[in-house]
Length: 162
Image (cartoon, one colour):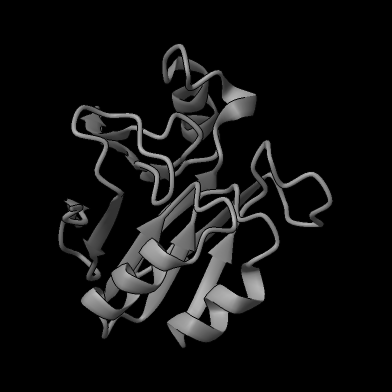
């Protein structure tokens, strides 16, 4: 299964539309927060099942602060990360993920891509589609190929900017 993972779109659609067109076909989309009201638009544009979580800028949203679900046999947790101090480090998020028995935890908030495996736990942040903060400041996202009984393959990707 191909999964598109994005975060921090902040209601800006241009880069996200470009990413969706570049990566189609995919079967699932995960948004790690700061959607700013674009959930239905993203769902329609992606044309697949989607998971969204509430970010620190989703002020009037009814979205949950985190979601846990099974994907191809793997337990996945998605959160924005601001409630777990991810701007400083991932320690609180790791602790929460382990307490929930997840194998993959995805977060946003920092606007910087991050991918690490620690003792059987994959931690990943796709970066920001709209306001990237890493060196080069290219809009970032991730693609995960996930199949039952096989290690997930996560690739960080970037849009070419002019």
